[in-house]
Amino acid sequence: MAYNPNTGLVYIPAQEIGQDFTPVKDFKPSPMGWNIDVAAGSTPAVKGRLLAWDPVHQKEAWRVSISVRGTVACSRRQATSVAQGDAAGNFNVYRADSGEKLWSMSAQSAVMAGPMTL
Image (cartoon, rainbow, N blue to C red):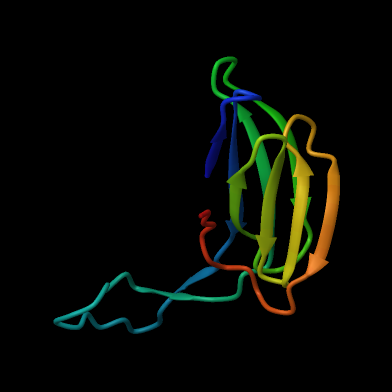
């Protein structure tokens, strides 16, 4: 997550990863572990997006949907742009004020680490 004082927006890498849970037949608690009596199943709908949020007006300014499994991994603030990477190996740059895509490249590997600057 990052804040840009020039736009007044907060940029949030968001993802929805649903999980199916089914009851375990003949469940027996163990002395350690979660003991939740359900088994985790598939994740049928994974959605990701980069959100620009206006904290003053408490509303979304813009969003970019990410249509790949794994979704947004990180975002960072720059003066006029927001950089975002995803698990599919895409590194993208968007206009900070509108979300318009300015540039993209394949990083040839998932972009999963937080951003850094010198």
